[in-house]
Each structure stands twice: as C-alpha cells, then as structure tokens.
Length: 320
Image 1 (cartoon, rainbow, N blue to C red):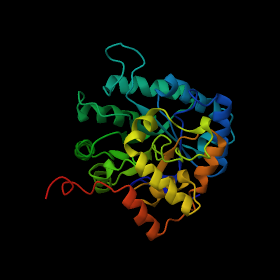
Image 2: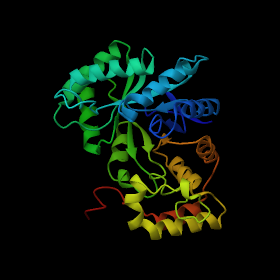
Image 3: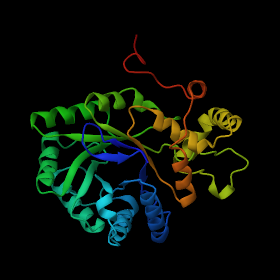
Image 4: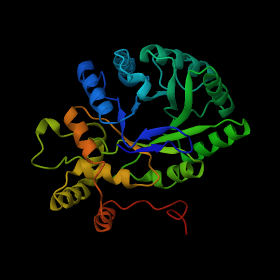
C-alpha cells in the first residue's frame, strides 16, 4: 500500500479510503466488520463516514469495530462529517457553532473514541459565517476532540473563502476537500481541484465509479443482481450510454475490468490524494485493491480522454 500526505499536512493516508456509506444500510454490521478487517489488513488506514449515514448506524458499526481492540483505532485515520439534521428542530443540522459542537459530541459517542482525525463539513452552509464555523472548529481542535478540518461538496470559491478566513485567524484551515470526481463527472477540474491545489488541500474523490456506472454496467457477463441501476447510475446512464459502451469495449479490448480502470484513472490524477471507495462485499474491495498497481499508458489514457473529455480549466472553458 502506498501512502501520501493529506494536502500540506503531515498526516499520511492510504491511496484508497474505505467509505462506510453502505454500513448499516446495505451492508450488515457483520459484513461491515469483515470489510473493515480486510481493508485494515491490506494497509488501508483511512475510513470515511458521516453522522447521517444510516441515521448514525454507520458510525455505530465503526465504533463497535474499534472496541474490538488490536490497534484498530490507533492505526485508522478516522474521518466523519457534520451538516445533516436528525430532526426538524430549528437548530438541528447545518454548521452553526451550536450544531457543530452537538454533532461532534454525538459522533464521538457513536464511534466510541475520544477524537476524530478529520472532521468534514458535508456541505456548504450559506447561512453561517466562516468566523462562526472556524470558532467552533478551532475550539474542538483545542479540546483535542478533532485534529483536522475538511470540506466536502464545496465550490472553489467556498474553499477560498474558508482558507482566507482561517489564515486571518492564524489557524491551519482546511486539510482536504472531498468532491464528486470520476471519469464520467469531471466538473471538479474547473475550479474545485485548482482551488484545492492552490491552498494545499488534499483531494478525496467520492463516487469514483459514479455509483457503479463505470463498473461494467452494460456487460452481458454482469450478474443482474450486481448491476447498479439505481441512484446515480440510473440518473446518468441514459445520457451517457454511448460513452459507457465505448468505455467498456475499450476495457474489454485490453482485457481489463472497467471498475479497476476507473479507479486507476482517478489514482493517476496527480491532484487526487485518494478515491473513496464504497465496496458492498469483500469481492468489490479486492477488485479495488487490484487497481493500485494498475498503470495506464499514455495511449490508453488518450483513448479514455476521447471517450470522456474533461471540461477544461476555468475560465477558458467558458470564456476566450
């Protein structure tokens, strides 16, 4: 397993991040623990979840796994998120100082730990000023309850706002941005990734298979039960069917699995620290691990670029 520093921090994280979105929702607690053990033994040292995943169930499953001991907690870089509401009460949810404090305490209880390594804002809160957000986050850092702060689903100018405000406070600011990024969805290349690079943030790419659409969804060899035809795949496939067909044909010509090529492509992007994978089974996890040594040559990358052209940098992509 290879490791990279998360942005400009001294924190070393594995090139694959185990995402726990499915824990408690699709994957049973027992199978989730098997995935955690398999990932840990393979050298994956970062686990990503959120307080709202499974309405808290994902964090609880990870917390139970930590309680088994054996250096599980010590070895893992634990990332979770704050923003979502658990009720319709007026101060539940978003990024007020009050909610950040309450949500962090609740996550710590569910995760059975005394600190969160990377506490990520799951979405931008346009109603709360950055001064208030950083006041709450800096307090949690001072108390030792979180070590680093990250953003997720933020625009490039949100990242700039947050970092400039943090710099004025003489604090570290954001360590990372977790954004949607894959072969089929490259909008992040316009402003999010350039902003992250400019401010020294690590980039964690969520949905590297675009909800399974890049995992061989059209292949007749795919078992019907394993085809992802819901969520992001269902919404995106109709408009991208021709591209996906060309993509799967290219992978077949080179005798490579589409899912592994999609992950290898993300890993090949120099701005990306790691993709966040969301395996439902150990077979999916083993496939993801096989993408690590996969090297895509220049000719193959050029063919991928023709199938899935990027948007180009901003502002040139929409101006002269």
